[in-house]
Amino acid sequence: MDLDFLAVCASVQSTMIKTGKVTDRRAIRFGRMEDILRDVHGLNRRVEDGATLRGAGNWTPAQVVDHVAKSIGFSIDGFPADATPPLPLRFIGRMLRTSVLLKPTKAGITLKGKVAAALAPEPNVTWGQAVTRMTNVMSRIQKGERMTASSPMFGRYSHEEWNQFHCRHAELHLSFVQPK
Image 1 (tube, helix red, strand yellow):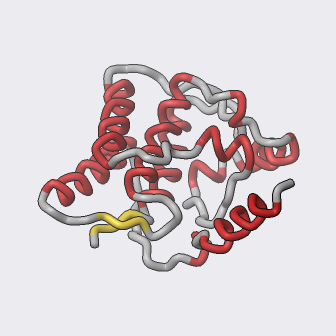
Image 2 (cartoon, rainbow, N blue to C red; image 1 turned 120 degrees about the vertical axis):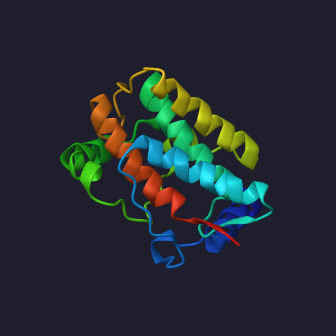
């Protein structure tokens, strides 16, 4: 393997924020999917009023919203094959499948390899594109589409369970987005 490549990888990892240690986050709790959309639209109003958003983690605010919206879309349309984690992680996921619906998700979990690439936000997504993606996917649900795809990590969820999963997932990620 090329030594320059290894040096770049080591440099990128050393500049990564350890998100489990970040304390400057918003305290948010969502009870319904509509709460997620309301929060994103509230942040968007702040942007339209001239505020700048910052991400307290490793992603930009646009990437955070894009990732959450992408995840919601996958629960409707199905997940890419590359999003399937290794068997030991799937086994652990199946054991935790109910608790992740009820308890806040802890920061600091880092996905790796193909799974991370499949679930990652678009690298150059703009705030406007991310808000549009979120609005569009939520509109699909409001019009009656159901979230019934099987999770590659946790297995089958009902539409109602997916609602709770996405609320916990969005609480985690959106807590890192703050107006400056």
